[in-house]
Length: 232
Picture 1 (tube, rainbow, N blue to C red):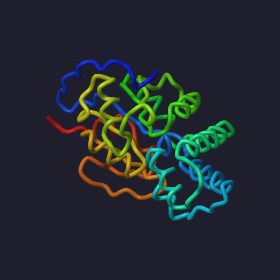
Picture 2 (picture 1 turned 90 degrees about the vertical axis):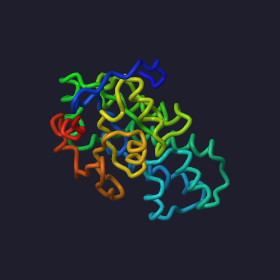
Picture 3 (picture 1 turned 30 degrees about the vertical axis):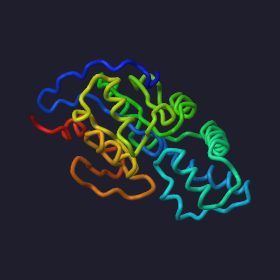
Picture 4 (picture 1 turned 120 degrees about the horizontal axis):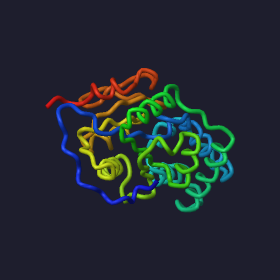
C-alpha cells in the first residue's frame, strides 16, 4: 500500500452519496500526539535545550519539516533539520513499539467502514516508516491506500495529500469525508474541497462550513458520515 498508485478517472457523484472516507492518523486514530511532544522534549534535552510547553500547540499536526524547523529556530540548537528528523523518527518509533493506544471509537469505525466496503485511505503527515509501523496495529486491511508526509511535495496544510488520496481511490474530493484532529489537517481537507469531521486532540478547533466538530469518534459512524454529504 503506497500513495504512488496510478490515478483512475473519478467516478461520477450521484445524489448525496459518500464515495470515500479519508482519515488522519496521529491523534485521530491512534493516541500519539502526546508521544511526538514527549520525544521532541527528550531529544532537545539531549541537545541541552528545554522546550517551552506553549510550543506544543505550534508544532502539533504539521509536517516534520515545519515542526522540527520551528524548534531548531526557537531553541538555537546546533543540529540540521535532516539530523533532527532522524532522531525524532527513531524516538517515536521506539515509543510506539512499546505502546500504541487507539483513540476511542477508532477500531469500531474502521471495522464498520470495512464491513460496508467503503473506500478508505490513511492520510498522514508522518513519514512512511512510521505509517507502516502503525499499520500493524490499525490493520492494513482497513485501508485501500495510504499517503505519507514524505511522499508528497507539499503536505498538510496544503490540499495535496487529500487530493492524491481521492485520485488514488477514483473519487470526487467533494464526496469524501475527512476525519482530522488538528486545524492544520482541517485546512488541508478544506482546501481539497472535502467535508470534515474534526475530533480535536491537543488544540481546539472551531466548527464551520464543511467542518463538524465532535468530542470523540465514538459517535461517528457510517450514517453520520453519509449525513455530511451535500445534497444534489
